[in-house]
Amino acid sequence: MLKELKAPQKDSKAWCSQSDRLQMAEDTLSAVRRVRRQVVDCMRTLMKAGKEKKTEGMFDIVEEMLRKTSVSAPYWTRP
Image (cartoon, rainbow, N blue to C red):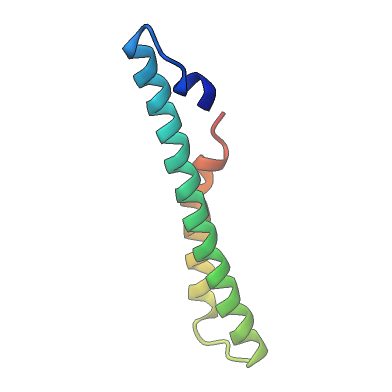
């Protein structure tokens, strides 16, 4: 796709379309990475609390992880 994008285009509309798709893919990847990082941070916090046997707030952390993964699920299921 990058080769096609760099090649001279006769039709500027096609170039914009490819550029837009590439930008959308990049934005989606960046959003997935950000959510993944946040979920991993929640997991670390949860593991630390479990190790210290502090159950207060664990349910909230799990709820936050579930919320973040359900929000990002459409990014992973796109064709």
